[in-house]
Amino acid sequence: MSELNVVLIEDHDLTRIGLRTALKQQEGIRIVGEAPNASQGLRVLESTQPDVAIVDIGLPDMDGIELTQKFRQFQATNHNDKTKILILTMHDSEDAVLAAFAAGADSYCMKDVSIDKLVEALRATHSGCSWIDPAIANVVLHQVRQTPSNGHNTNQAKTVAIGAVDPEMEQVLESYPLTERELEILELIVSGCSNAAIADKLYITVGTVKTHVRNILSKLCAEDRTQAAVRALRSGLVA
Image (cartoon, rainbow, N blue to C red; front, side, top):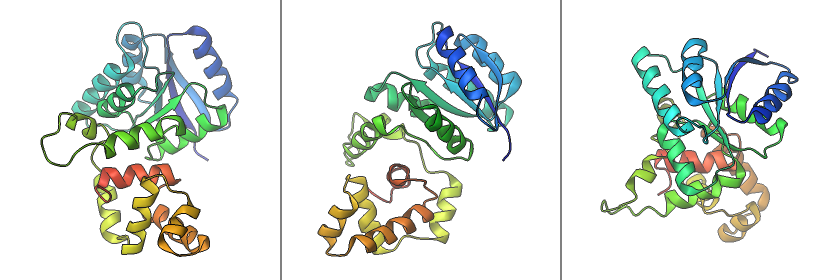
């Protein structure tokens, strides 16, 4: 397992120290820098270019969303998109969540996440997946699905917040298109239906649903149903 280089940007000393201590005990995780505010954090990110940066939203000089925007601009100028951004915060409001993704964040975790889940999120984020805390996943999905498609939508920016599908994902979907049944099940997943509910609605067995779900996750390169739902919405597979 390759070593994962991480930077911590968190203004609360106890939280930052606690994170550093906990992550250092995890195999394959290396803390290569840290900062108590956004200005210092930006400099650390530019100089170290870690695999993943853990960024708090509530920083004292500029918030983590603005920091993310500025660092994405730096990356674009320098043609380097190595570093992924994982937002770690107590803020679970729709505005905060969607603004973070609009700014270019890759993943979003709540601060009450367990260390095991945080490590899982770090590795998923590094691999190119968007890890979204289950506590706010419904916020994201609900907001996107509430966006009208008539072109006269005042909340259009919130749809953009989820971001366009990556070119790599477009190629995957072209190479391994979902079947009509898989698309039908994917739409029910996005609607929040359980496997049992999907089986009832489609008059098929739960075992058959599970097989379809596994195929869907594989084709969308998703680790779980939440990631599959987000990618479905981002790619336009589900309206």
